[in-house]
Image (cartoon, rainbow, N blue to C red; front, side, top):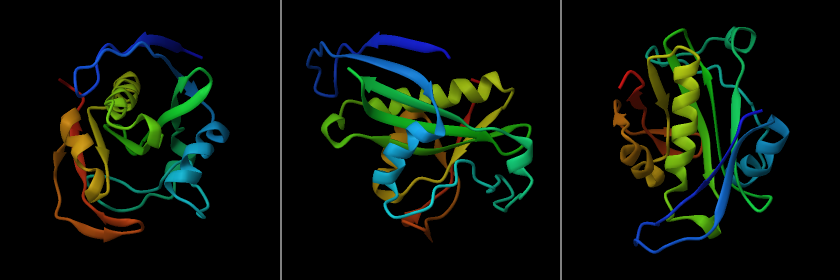
Length: 168
């Protein structure tokens, strides 16, 4: 297990922060804590059979690929999470980004997207894709994703596909 300890020196308002956060790979049981908040009352599928760019489904994804789960901790408290997995040899999907309500507006989602993007690169992918909800779409744009579809109704609101180039 690779752990990263780092300091965030400023938040969106430029204020100094002395909090130390630890980013580490976690298990699907550990990410369940965040996903129970993100998707209440839902059975969690720790890997998705959705594909891109086909925008279809591949039931064999579960046999072909394994997911990686990331958690960001503040003194043992899970404060942010994200996960990802391959959906084909060149495409990696990020899903389930979550930030604890007391830690929002500190750009922690950017840390979580970087962890997933780096993992996708390590697994040889060229593209990272996601399907974020409209109210939270700005955090993927800020990271560098481009919206590549129209808005559409989905399980938990209005969503659109977003794509990020892992080759840069």
